[in-house]
Image (cartoon, rainbow, N blue to C red; front, side, top):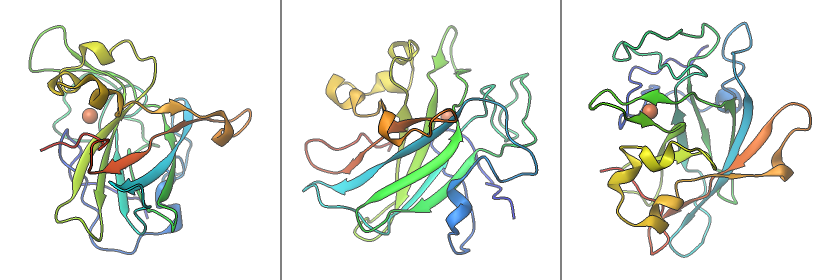
Length: 200
Ligand code: FE
């Protein structure tokens, strides 16, 4: 079964229904008959509370554009190709140590249509839900060294530079799969002075 989110736009999480999370739901590369276009990557990290304790059994959902910067959604009218082998949504549960992992492709940047000369940096949307949270939390992961981060209209709404930096993942050689995929680590802190910025 292919996970088909009903919404794939900024600030809206995909809707999966209430089926059980399967172990393969975190592999966005194998949801179709063929392999999606683009650079294959591992995205992983740890979710902790404001005290640094692991947030276990947390539902982590991601959604993203394909390698061309195109979403599988009617709202995305940009003239770019849909990848028939890539939906761009996945989910998983954190383990007892608060850790999660996804296999996916690096999303393309895409233009911000609300004003001229603005582009979104390459990003993954994250949604977290679980015990101890009164509402689901939504954030975005950026990629280190992306020159578009400084011009990104969403990132620039966060006034604190340190907070903005908490959205940037880091290259993680230890988690890479040699000759196949490089890895990015994105740790998420739920609250406290080092909290990962969340969308309202
Ligand atoms: Fe987006």
